[in-house]
Image 1 (spheres, rainbow, N blue to C red):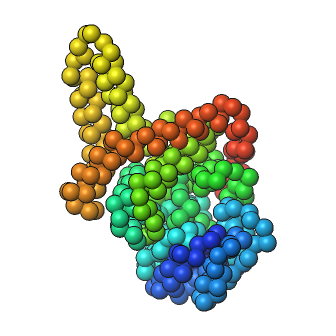
Image 2: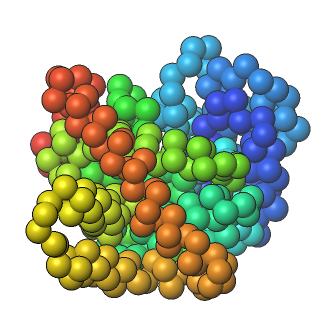
Image 3: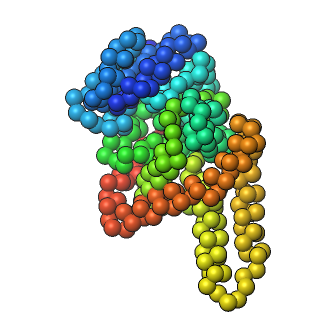
Length: 342
C-alpha cells in the first residue's frame, strides 16, 4: 500500500459531467494521487470520455448501484487514503491536498467530510438555492456532524475495509448516512471540515426539478429515519430548521382554513407568531443566502424555502411514512450492534 490518495468516482450515465469532474481532479495541486472511476454499466458515451484521462477505469458487467461502485473502486485502491466524490462534483485545486493534511492530522480513527461550495457550477436560481441550502446545513455544526456525505468523504483505506463499506442492499439514496452511522457505532469519529469543498453540478432548470429532488430525498430519508428511530434528529439537511419550516407552514394553513369555517375570530397573533419564530430559527440560513448571492436572491430564496419547498418535503415524508407502515422497510439494513473497535 502506497502513501497518497485514491480518488473513487462512481459513474452511471454521467457523460454530461464526468469530463468536468476528471479535468478538475487532474488540475489538483497534489502529486500523490490516483483516480479510479467505476462505470456502473453506463449506456451513454461516459467510457469514451473517461478514457481520455490518465485514470483507472473499471467497467461493471451488471448494474450494481452507487454503493457497489464505490466499494469496488475502494477494493482496487493502491493508496492508504480514500477520497470519495461523485461524478457531478468538481474538486477545488487544493481539495486533495487539504484532505490529505486533515487525514494526517486526525489519524485513521477519524473520517473527514466536506461539503458543497456556496456557488455551484450552474448558477440558476434553483441550483444556487440548493447549493447554499446544503452547504449551510452540512456545515452548520462545525466539526460535530451526524453524517458525512459521499460527495466529499476522506477515510483511511484500512478503516474502510474494516467497516464493510457502503451498504449495497439498500435504498437508492441515503447510503452515506447509513454508512456514517455505522462508522460511529464502531467507534470512529466523524468530523466536518467546512473548507474541504467540491463544486456541484445540479442542472436544476425548473421548479419541477427542485421540487422533485426535495420530494425524493425526503421520502427516502423519512423511510430510513423511521427504521433507524431518529426521525426527529438534527441531521444535516434533515435539520430541525427544515422540519420546523414544514410544520409552521401547515400549521398556518390549517389555522387559515379553520378561520374561514369558524364564526369565532382567531387572534392574528396565532398566525404571525409562529412565522416570526420560524424566521428567527432560520436567520443564519437566510444570512448565507444574502452573503452568497445578494439580498434580492435571499428574499426570493427565503420565500421559496418557507412557502413552496415545504410542500415537496411534506409529500416525500408522507410517502416514506406510508411505505414504512405498509411494511416495505425490510430493505433497510439493520445497523450493526457489535462494537468492533478501531
